[in-house]
Length: 394
Image (cartoon, rainbow, N blue to C red):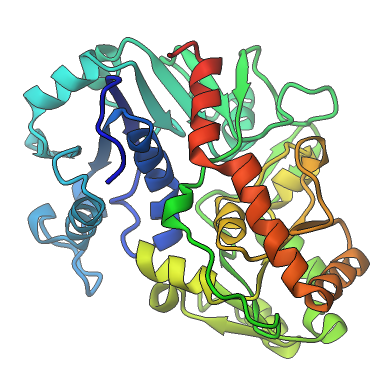
């Protein structure tokens, strides 16, 4: 449950209810909520839904009260001791209402908060945003929102007072992510170590795994004469890694059945595929899947690679915390983290093969190094304290 809250309130706004049954996405928000609570803060989670988003367990449209969206959100909040610390803002043709913590209590806690942290600007309700003394935009997809604004597509940053990004190279001259003239605070993502204990690691003969979407919600971006693509555009470059490196490679892969050519390509090259809803459909199954893996093989979105933004996957830090080595495509993280032991990076197929063989060849050493990296660089008790210091919050 963490320490007793004594420091005031931090509000986190995100999109958990929109993606029920996606355990890894859920952990993105839990790491902040549980991490801040462990530091002694009261926390409040704000979510939002419209009627076109609500579906039952079979995928059929239904009222929000019977939706899997609400059931999943409420279940997760309750299991983690946050049952009194969330509110779902539901808007339909008849107006808006708050499910969970009522409107008056939400406004009172938002007005008295130290910060409202708005993940990717997901919360757009003007009354709630203007009630917060400080509105922090938290950028977890560095490059997308910035390019959208530069191209005139959308401005997700409007109305915020502070700007935080997990792209740790943002603002450096060698980084391709536009700064928009904003004063960016950079931070790693946090992992709550007590939620991710080290488990018996075995001999390293198990599968290198990852929990990923083939394309995701955003399409490629044409920006200043270059095309910035998605994970699929990078993954194809490494498609024959299982045949070259040997051993088992498994993907809990969200890929549409219409992607017949890519599915055939993956199967032909030895990639094993499992249903992410089955193995990682809630926070607990996701945690077990990560811990049962030998290591992570992480391919980044093409945009992250091309811009060199210094992005590290929220999945990767969970693997590291569990004492599982990570073989990650390089996004320019060498400025911030030691690589080569526990966390190995690659830029081409040959480096990926070498990294996989290195991990399997000295597995116990890499497992120990992985956990040390999580403790030294991603521990929520360190990451979130530093973030608050950068934002001038005691």
